Image 1 (cartoon, helix red, strand yellow):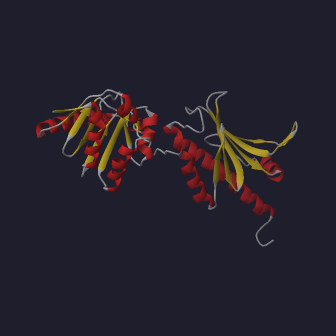
Image 2 (cartoon, helix red, strand yellow):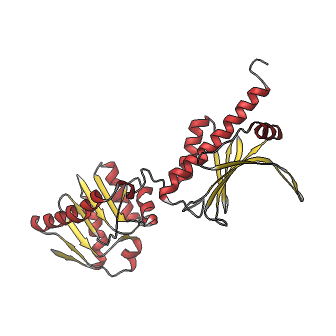
Image 3 (cartoon, helix red, strand yellow):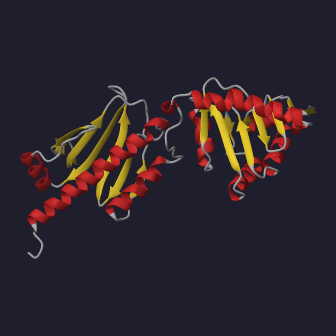
Length: 291
C-alpha cells in the first residue's frame, strides 16, 4: 500500500473518480461538496460518462443525503457507518477523510492507496462483506425514501402545473409558503401543539355557504374544516377552507424530513386540486354550460 500525504489525499480521490470507466464506489459517513468545485467537476463527469456510481452515507445524516441527491446521485444509508473508502475498477483508497470540503482544507487525515491486485481485491472483499451485505440485510423501509428531492417545492410546483394545466407560483415566507394556483393557498408547519401541517385556501362567500350547507369537504389524511371570514379588528379575513395534519417529524415547511417529503407533497397537492375541483363544480352549477 502507498501512503498518501495529507495535502494530496483529495487530489488522489479526484484522480480515482476521473479515471473510473465502469464503476466508482464512494463510502463516506458525511458529505459536503456543494462548495468544492474541484471535486464537483469529476463527479458530474461520472454521469456524462455513464459510470455506475454508488454513494454510501451514514444513516440519518440528512444534510449529507441532500448533498448527494442534489447532484443527481442516489444516497445509500448504512447504520453506524464510519468507514471512508473510495475505489474504481482498478485502484482503491482507504482514508480517514470524509468527502467534506472542510476536511480537505483543515483536517489532518491519512490515506493509503492500493499498489497490487491482491491489495485491491482485499478492499473489494471488505466492501462486499461489510458494506454491500449490510444494505442487503437492512429491511427495505430502512433505506432512503423511494425519491428524495433537493427542493421538494419544485416537485410540488411541477405536479400542480401538470394536474391543473396552468402556471403555478410558489413563494416562501419565514414560516410558510404561498401557492398561487388560480386561487391562493398557504401551507406551513406549526409546532405549538406538536408538529402539525396546516393548509388554507380562499373561498368566496358563495362558495363558503355552499360548502357549509352541503358538507362538501371531507379529509382522509387530514382534518378539513371551514373558517368563516369577516372583519378582525382593522383587517378583513377571507372565508377559507383549511386542513390540518398532525404527528409530523418535520418542524419547518422549509426543511422537511426526507421520509416525509412525499407525504407532504401529496397532501398539499391533493388539498389544492380538491379545492380547485370544487370551485370549478360550483361555477358550473351557477353558470351551466350554454347559459
